[in-house]
Length: 503
Ligand SMILES: [Zn+2]
Figure (tube, protein in one colour):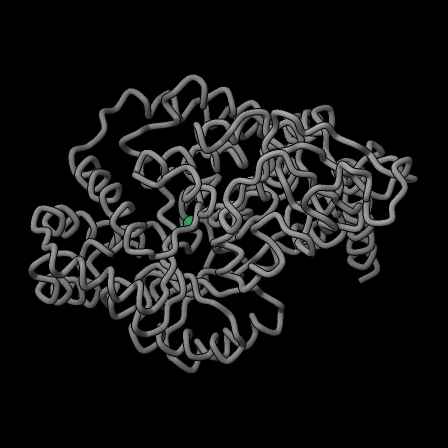
């Protein structure tokens, strides 16, 4: 007994020490002169989805975390703050945008690739908010604590585990399918689980693909009672239109939308339900991919514009957000992992993980993109521009670290892909700033550059509206009012590579 207590005590102490060590590594450093309570960026071009472009204005940022003034402040009116107490940044020729979101990440997917990697790499790449779309709260607890305590960490929004059917996909049976979920067989179980998650303080819930319609409906109903939005994979047992009308707030990967865009939706759905019932596959993951293999190609080959427009109208009327995650959707076709410049980003993650990624990516690069994946890719791309032109809200998310997606850097790939798919650079920025803030009902606090807003900002050296790749030319990141300069960003960028995750 004593031995056990000793062990628990030691492990507590060790985790406390690790925690404070980590905090001292990632926390805001001394760049911000303690006596200077604010930063003023003068003559900068401010760009956001609410105000458009404002050339050569001043933005006063408080160290306390908020934007105090936006406008003509170079005349010397710094809201009562003495000029000596300000860090003045010359913003001439520079561009200020709101801090970016990655609206689809998994901090507990790869053992050893957690917030200690995600947080510094995200901030170093201008990503100031993360939405974790599925993982057990016990594993996310250190990340949530660090996000709360360190003002220079990204804001972290969590759903807790994927709420899946009894036969669940992410059940831990292999490295590619770690345990990220709970299986819910009945509406009653679903309601209890949602209550439990709400009590644990989740920000939204995530409903997954193997749910039965009545269990899915119970999750949504119970989540609405707690005012929690619902990010969903459209369950295989229903159509995207049905999921939208049941109350899903946001859909991932555009997955299963193709089923609602064909001439024979009900025929395919019937077949799908049969396959789910007969359950011939060894795992839920295999069953799901069998269903996609059998149906996706034929659904895409038999596209019906009238049916698809109906679906898009339903999504619009029900204000259902879409997180297309093009970076992962194009895993088998665009093959980012096969590019040398992308493989270079593997050096940013802990070496044990980066080396594994490089080996597997190199091997995978030898195979050819498959035809079915190419057809689905083309369909997804065409769908993104249709959704955008019908004003269905789109969020930028990547699914990092799945598919060798380096945290932080991946979000810029997603922005590029959204523009390739037909969004304007401003619409792509909106997808990574204002829209996720709106999803959480936070648009009055962030997502635009206005007085009273949270000071999460990115200062760029080149105009992102001329070329979306310019979101990568980062001069500084401002997180909760803290101005992180080049030196600090470089330090954050190089931190995860020093982590030993081998044991
Ligand atoms: Zn995901």
